[in-house]
Amino acid sequence: MLTQSPYPMISVEQALQAILTRTQPLSSERISFLEGQGRVLAEAVTAAEDLPSSPRSAVDGYAVAQLAAPGTLRVLGELTAGQVSSTRVEPGSAMRIMTGGLLPPGSDAVVMVEDTQEQDGLVHVSKGIQPGDNVHPTGQDLKREQVVLEPGRQLGPPEIGMLATVGHTAVSVFRRPRVAILATGDELVEPSETPPEGSIRDSNRFALIAAAREAGADVVWQRHGPDDRIALERLVREALDVSDVLITSGGVSMGTRDLIKPLLADLGQLQFGRIAFKPGKPLTFVTIEGKLAFGLPGYPVSSLVTFEVFVRPALLRLQGLQQALRPRVTVALEHVVRPDPVRLEYQRAAVRWVGGRLSARSTGSQGSSRLLSMIGANALLEIQPGPDRLPPGTAVPALLTGNLVAD
Ligand code: AMP
Ligand code: MG
Image 1: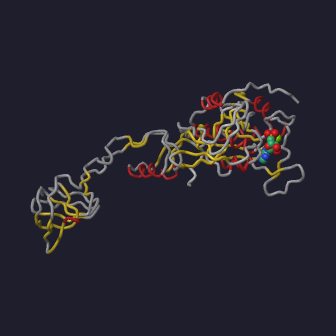
Image 2 (image 1 turned 135 degrees about the vertical axis):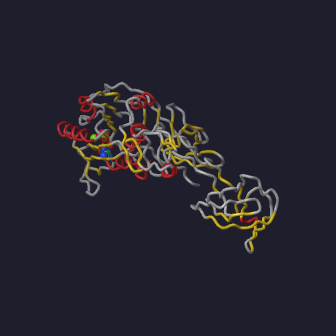
Image 3 (image 1 turned 90 degrees about the horizontal axis):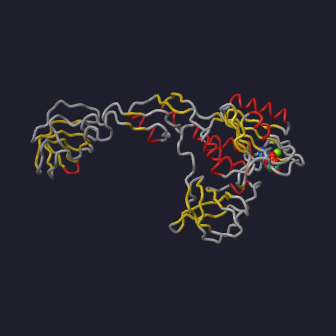
């Protein structure tokens, strides 16, 4: 067993840079626009026509012509949304019109129904109006040839609505990354089994499947492997055959059965094998024939936190998102925090908005085997190394990993 790691220690920024400079959007595919929810546009979308294509009524009321003062007008008929009228509205006459109805020829404004009274074919209008009042002019919402969605934009409800508006029903989006997940460890059993003495249930595989899916990936392969070089090599090759990204858990530390690091390094180019980061110092990143492989540490918290900080940004970039990092905010500690003496530590916390500022409460003991410390956490506090305890009220940077806790 080695006593010193042969891998140079690099910083969090260096590690992120090493990952993101090797991560380009995957190819694109054309899919039906509603299937595009959550995906990222690989093309610009433009409006083919003005919207509205001609002036429309913004309210229910009466289309009028040059009605500067109150008056009584003859009602020529009724126009509902979708109808086109050829009847001309002259001064002294009006046409009943519904919201969205095309303005009839001759009319220049619409009086709201609330300002009118109709009886026996005549409508009395209680106040005069200006041309253009209560009218949506041509092109008010969209101009012909206007770019309405830029490439790189993620498709959510308004974007799906916009694609429908402009009739862009087949949309080009970046492919989702295909992810393979390999949990390693002789001690692991399936969640449905009762672990014999010395064994534990495999939780990382499932937490990582969920995390990868939440990050927009397609998990196409997942297995548990033993701590055996030959078996692991076979599994890693099988996984890489079907995926863009391989994520392994366990087997990257200093034990005699930690075989993943040298295995991945033999198959590709090791980019880094150690970071000044807690929890997850032995995180490993290797590129293998254009694919990415991440060796995550085995402790459940380490594997999820390293996924969050290093793997998730890569998965987002692969699907075309430029904004791959979580928002970074300043939070006030609600209690004492003890920094690690030498490593930058990402502590799990629940952040809420209290008294006009963001306030962070620890999720309890921060041991890297204690998965409970991630339950209810919506932030990772960036605690710089140092000898001194941080008192309550100290302002620290934090990555927001979830919604703010409602208080
Ligand atoms: P390793 O990085 O393989 O040395 O594992 C570190 C610790 O994490 C050990 O206590 C393992 O039992 C535990 N561990 C490794 N893999 C998993 C997993 N998939 N699920 C839960 N715990 C794990
Ligand atoms: Mg292990």
